[in-house]
Structure formats: C-alpha cells, structure tokens
Image (cartoon, rainbow, N blue to C red; front, side, top):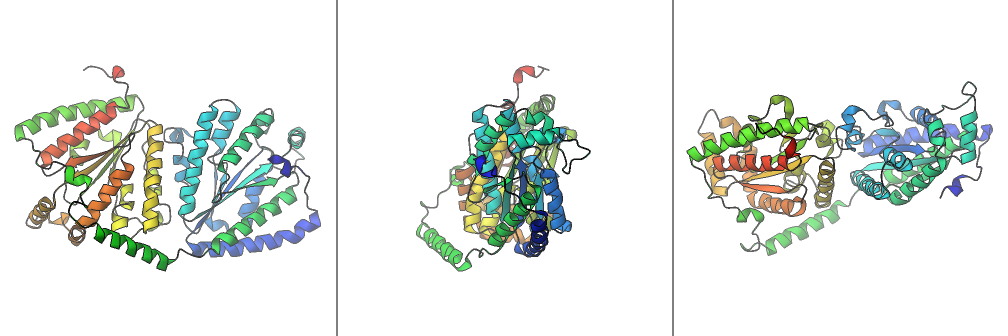
Length: 506
C-alpha cells in the first residue's frame, strides 16, 4: 500500500512559490463557502513519526482564516478522558457547522499504537476499526466533510531524520520519533491494516508522500481544495422527492388504520396495576435504602450509570426522578433536563450535547428526556425528515453500545399512562394554582398527536431495546406503582455492573 508513496516526488522552491499563493487563496475562498453551507470540515492528520505532521498543521492554520479553525491534539490522554468512553474526548471537540477542526492525531492513534506494541489483540483492533467507521459514517451523514491524511516516510528517511541534529533541523521533530522508529515495521503493518479497513467512500484516506516537504504541503492543499469544492457543490437533498416519500408513508399509515393494525407495545402494558399506601411506603423505603447503598458501591468500584427518563406529558417522570435522587447522595449524580436545542447545539450532530454530559467513573447522569427526542418529537413534529430519524436508530444503538462497553449501566424508562388518565391530570393541573405552570399550550398540541407519538414510541422500542440497553415500559396510571417499578428496575440494573461480593453487608 505504501509503495506508491515512496517514489521520490518533489517540488522545487520556484514551483512551490508559484503554487502556494494559489492554494492559499483557493482555500480561503472555499472556507467562505463552508461558513454558509451548514457543513463542517474535519481534517485528520496522521502518519509516520518524523513526516512533518506538525509543520502541516502549522501550514493549515496559516492557509485558513484561523477564527473558524480549531486544532486538537490527542496524543496525551487525561485522567478525565480515561474515565469515560473513548470517543467522549472526540465528541466534545467536534466542530460546529461552518467551521474547521484539525485533528492532530485522532481516533486512530491509540488503536494503532496499542496493536503495534501488542497491548491489544487483532480482534479487538478490528472491532475498534468497525466503531471508527461507524463514527465517520454518522458524522458524514450529518454534513461533516472528513479529509483523512496519512503522511508516509520510507524507513531509511525516518532513520535519517532521527539522526539529524535538532539545532539545524528545518522540521519540528516529534518527541515520539525515537521511540516509534524502533518499531517502524510493526507500525507500518498495523497502519496499513487500519487504512484498508476504514478507507470508505464517505471518508477515504489520502496517502501523502512526505519525503519532500514542499511536495507534501502543496499536495495537502490540493486534496483539501478538491474535496471541499466537490462536497460544497453537491446538490441539497431533493425536497420534492422527500415530500413524495412522506406522502407514501401517510398513505401506508391510512391503510394500516384499523384498530388491530395499530396495536403497539404500549397497548400491552397493564395500567390497572396499583399499590396500597401502606405497601407503597414500605417498598419505597426499602428500595431507596438499597439504591443509596448501591450508589456508593458504584462510586467505590468506579462504575457509572446513564439513566434515561422518557414518557408522556404528565406521566409522572419528574416525581419518579425525585424519588430516585432522594436516595442518592447529591455528590454522586447530575440531572440533565433536555429542552429544545440551543443554537450551539443545533450547530452540531444531535448526539453531541449528550456525549458532553456523560459521567466519569463512579458517578451517574440522569437525563430528563434524552437523545430519543430525535425519533419522537423530531419525527412527529417534522424537525427531522424520514431519512434522518430512520438512520438515528442505528446511531443511538452504537452510542449506547459504547457506553455499555465502557462498563456503564444504561437504564431507560418510558413512563406510560392512558389517554384518559393524561386528560384527567391535565385538567387537575389547570385547576390547581400550584400546578398550573406544569401545563402549557404545547402539552395540548402534543396530545392531539397521541396516535403518531404512540407509533413512534413503538418503533423506538422495537429498534433500540437491546440486551445491553433495554427499555422498561413503566405502568404509570398509578404513580405509586410506577415509582416502585422504576426504583426496583434501577437497583437491579446497577447490581448487574457491580461486584456484589465487594459490597459490605451492613
């Protein structure tokens, strides 16, 4: 694979002086178009140590208007990053639409280093390449333009640069050069495997011969200019075709409008289940004591949990959440209420704002509504088109799989009530001055779309209730029963990730 980058290409000083201003100007003009396009540019800078990657990064920051460019180096992993799923460090630095992110190192760096030094198995490495390809697919679908640059040096050239006196060297010598040069062959083999497994149509690799720095830099400029021009000139999705697709979906919905055809998973929930006040108080106290103990065990064993509360308006999510938090020391959890996205959040992939709030080891994050808004509110209200919300099922499953792989307990609740019970609670809120703030015009509008939301919930459970992140549909007509069901399910889920033998009996 790398033979094509060892042929000795070069540019003279005069050729470089002629080409460089043209590349610079073209990139600045394309950056102006990028700002208006609703897309972001991600440039991945990887390759052989000593190939001048640092010089290239410096050049990119001179060629682009740096007001909209962020450079991120991922060679040094912090304790904060190690305590979360691996991709957390990348998601939190994803570029906003219209901007450029230069990734000096990337999600490829650690897997390649680990396999080269035999810290992981080939199977683990291949699995990680699969996750990377899925991440890049997700970002590409959302409008990110991904340019992956691999800078190659023949072994003899790397050794020569290693021997050069840094006082007279014209390039920035990598602090890793001496260590990694000893394992050149191992790195070349692993790198070729990584490139081959992730060289996709939506995020192809560009192997750049880096022996001559002038050739290297102009080649990078041309790759970026050509890719940006092609991606920015692509026509936007055909709105008429999309409208026709939605019309077909509406016709199908009408065809399946009989009562039997529209039965959903929610129709199978027994909403008659209740608890007496005496039974409720006993079970509530017992479960809260159990949860309190488990929460401290999670902290001691450095385990974390992500807990999702979804459900109908007025279903009792807030009161159930309060019974959960009442049992846990306030230092051990955060509650993240999710409302309409801000302008900053709209400028990123919809999962970005949820990745940012993931807990570190020993802590819990509770989401009052969540990423499932993508396949519920955004689907029903038309904020996401059919293609966007359909692909979100897979994106969400991959997201939650990464949490589970990290050892996180992923617990998801849909609190279900009947159509009639919701009306009763709405009317109760309107008649109670202390609860009137809880009922809004939007609640009534959402109620008018009950059937659409019911179908959306059914699809959500069908597509995203997995072995590692199952949904619990809570019978919520009786609030006491719902609270006990939630506490019991949560305790069971936390016990599933803990070493119970290490928990004191007291």
